[in-house]
Image (cartoon, rainbow, N blue to C red; front, side, top):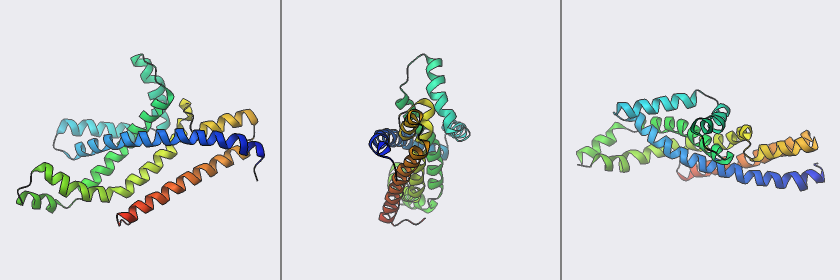
Length: 218
């Protein structure tokens, strides 16, 4: 189906790119999860300052494309603050701030969905606000947010392909470099598409497994 050159040269390059793809996606969304949780709680808090900062952050990130955010982080910020930023680190930052904004909305929605009776029951039992949050609010909120969090992780993996604009050597960049040398666009991008399909299919199966483990339904 594919030439021996493609199998012996391109496929190893794509596996190298896969390592970068997963590194950037996993690290970025892990940081984004922390950002999103803090921002999501802030959006639900009574602190007007924190709520405003979080609201502006979500508005800016959701209102601009990932590719523009990547260009700004990699080219503009180092110019303004006079420092060097490796492309992989820039990619992680982009995925983190982008996924964080969407996760904050997921967290906010999950917190809003928790039955207010949970808080009232905790207060009637003499529990502190921290104990109510940890034992009565976060567990059901996390369960309801899990499917959306899984979808966001998959989206973040797909978004890494846009980091080619800042020369992050993930799978798409590796394929583009190979195609620019060999001019074999049909085979190159067909193999790339199969790599993404296989990777994202595995992640979707993993997501479904986790949801079944928690007895969640779409």
